[in-house]
Amino acid sequence: MDAQEIKKSLKDIDQAFKEVDGMYHAYAKFCNMSDSEQWFLYSLWLHDSGCTQKEFCSEWFYSPQTINSALKALEAKGFIRLEFMTGSRKNKNIVFTPEGEAVCRRFIDPLLEAEKAAFCGLDEIEMIEYMRLTKKYNSLLRDEIGKLTKIQTNQW
Image (cartoon, rainbow, N blue to C red):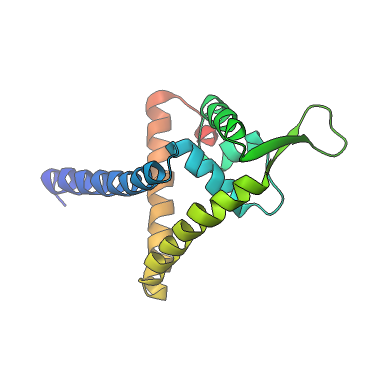
């Protein structure tokens, strides 16, 4: 590939990622939530027994400040509550309230089903290849941006 073709391909990749991001943003807006609130509920819904703020930041690449704001908003809406973890006076587990579970059944379950339907539109080889290439590209990009910024790659 020459330099022009690479430049166009990179633009196409970035636009594709932004398109997906836009789809999730539109769905969050439909659900009357911020993007971070939606992703927080989504992630927590996938955990069987709740999770900590630190686990969420690590899994979903959000800053602690962003998650703290989402936590406060979701707690104010009555969707989650914080409980001290067994044997700890410092660490808290984030768990759903009954209202939060109802919101997830109404909005997060259909989103998960839509993702599943889209992913199942690929054949098995395409699924594997998509995941392999996405992970490889992300790893390579993480390393390259790390070189530019001197940020340790494990922060992402």
